[in-house]
Structure formats: structure tokens, C-alpha cells
Image (tube, rainbow, N blue to C red; front, side):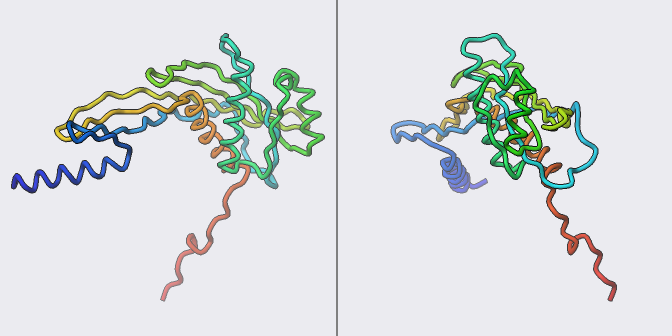
Length: 224
């Protein structure tokens, strides 16, 4: 290959990588940062309904319980629960989804039922954070989460979903013109929980609020 073409190709690749994030010093190789992505397992479905509801159902979300013994786990459970709640709002899993600020409701299902019914909610969402390994901005972070959805009136378990996710710090790779370095989020635990909540929320949304089929696309074209 022509040496001039090789140099031009390398420069073009460098400019494309700059769109991620970069810190370049003309006196030496610049550094290009790539944000590490969440790597999650498939969502496990221990319990799931056979049929769609007759209408989209509303829900009340309870604060999640942190099973792992750690300092301030009640506070952490509340904060991570808000992230799950916000993620499910983003994917529009329910036409209405309220959040219970009372942490005592996570251990008192009868009281949670009373609150849900008084608010007109059809479902109750609860669950647990079963494992947390917080590696901060330098180490590996792992989170395992379980979400359950109940009928607010009868208490029947409708959904039971579980998933594990992690963020693994990458390595720095040196090239001729630049250095490629991975970058972890400032709050990796929250990032993993939000990603898993979106995955679970999309599954529930497809059941609770299925999109109407496009008959025009599915209908065969008439023969000419």
C-alpha cells in the first residue's frame, strides 16, 4: 500500500475516535477514552403470565431490599429503587407507575396492598438487590437483582425476574498516534442497576402495553 494512503487512513481513524472523547497533547500521543458498557446476563423468568391483561395495568413500586449485609443498606436500597423506578418510567412499562417512599412497606405486604388499592394501582412491584460488588471508578462492579410483580388485590405473583450485570475495566492500548483507554462511569452500581431495570421493564412492557400490529405490513399483497 502507498505510504501516503496509509498515513491518511490512520489520521481518518484517529478523527473518528475523537468523537468518543479525547485529551490530546501535541507534544505526545493523545488519549482517546471509551466508556465501558454494562455486560448483563439474560433475564431469567422464574414466573411469567400466559396471557396479556385486558387493559394496560398501573402499578405501585415498593423500595427494594438489599439482602447483602453492608453499611447503610436501607438507604442504598432506597436510592437504587428510585433508579429502577425511573428506568421503568423511561421504557413506559406501565401507563402510571408511582413510587412508595415509605421503606417500611417493603417488609409489610398487607400495608403495601392497602396503599396500592387506595391509589388505584393494579399491581405491586417489589424485589431485592441480592449481590453488590462496588469497584468504584477503577475496579470491577457486579450487581444481581430480582424483581417481582404482584396483583395488588389478590397478592398473586405474576412476574418473577432476575438478572446479573457487571462493568469490567478495560486495558489501555497504545497506538502510534494515540492511546486508547477505557473509562468507567462515576456511579457504576447505579449504571448497572439502571441497565438491568430497563431490560426487565421492556419485558413487562411488551406484556402490559403491547404495540398494535401493523396489518398493512403483515397482509400479503393482492396478486396482479
